[in-house]
Image (tube, rainbow, N blue to C red; front, top):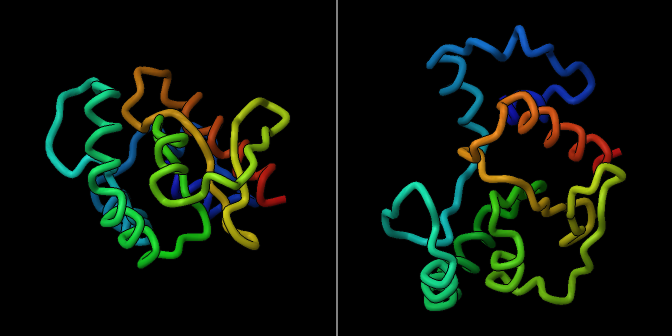
Length: 141
């Protein structure tokens, strides 16, 4: 839903369009993205931040190299933005806020990192989708 909305920023569909999506739709849309986990081993439905911090720090070089391979235009951190920023060497980048309060920074010319909720967060789905799309629209405007 978020990826489709970002790709269709000028004409974002209503929730009726997104309420029921097929597996084929999902597979096609997700071909254009990459997901990186800072913790490279399985976990549970909640994150122990001390463990995540330790593991990400230990794997820092690997994560930094992996991220550099993809060179994304848009990075959306699902609940791990400050840790991500540190691990990939963006400490000097300055956080900014959208007018609705979403944190983000420009990591390079026209390449952005957004701090947002994890996609599996226990939040009403339309709030997650349209909240992110609102932030992306403002940042890319």
